[in-house]
Amino acid sequence: MGKPGAGKTTFLKYLAIHCANSQILGERVPVFITLKQFAEFPNQPGLSTYIKQIFTDCGVTEAQAIEMINRGQGLILLDGLDEVREEDSDRILNQIQQFTEQYRQNSFVLTCRIAVREYTFEKFTEVEMADFDDQQIQTFVSQWFRAKESDSAEYFMEQLKENPPIKDLATNPLLLTLLCIEFEDSGAFPPNRSELYGRAIHTLLRKWDDKRRIVRQQVYRKLSVQRKEDLLSEVAFITFKREEYFFKQRVVACG
Image (tube, rainbow, N blue to C red):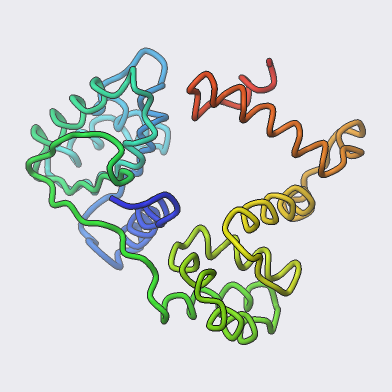
């Protein structure tokens, strides 16, 4: 469990990669499942069927997949229970309960935001993602600016120590990422959290296409940052009002 931006998904991917490389649980086979995608998959397959399909898509036969699960060799990583739509929630909870009970010899890790919804998994041990400590913040910042081929890491840490309210934000990996983006762009910290979000959005809207090497149609290239913010604000307002907190790209494209 963890707060938004605490690194739950990143941690599961870390487990998957290190397991695949035999650095942890070398006898296991990692299976990463985004629960929202599973919940909205066509025809609502069972979790067992869904996992078999994942293996089939990777060139593994269904018989091999069944044998692996039956022998308890799976590391099943279930990500984002809180992102499942309310109308799908009971079905997915039941699927997880049944699957983990039937194939209990496998290893399971399930992520969810703190205090999002009530549920009980008797066989699971609950742990919470800890905030970054000072050393982890230092490590993150050093590696971030090294990857950017920048020598700003030391100055960043000096400024962070002189600004306790901003340092409190830096204990969250997502907010620390936004701080690094903003500091890289302007060489200073914003005065408060709302200003941080505003500046980070502004920076991303200006740099996203260049960073991702995305080439837009001519009509979109001329959109100013303000127009982009206006457009996204309209989308946010409409979807929030409808309680559609997660939606597909085609929904936005179709209006």
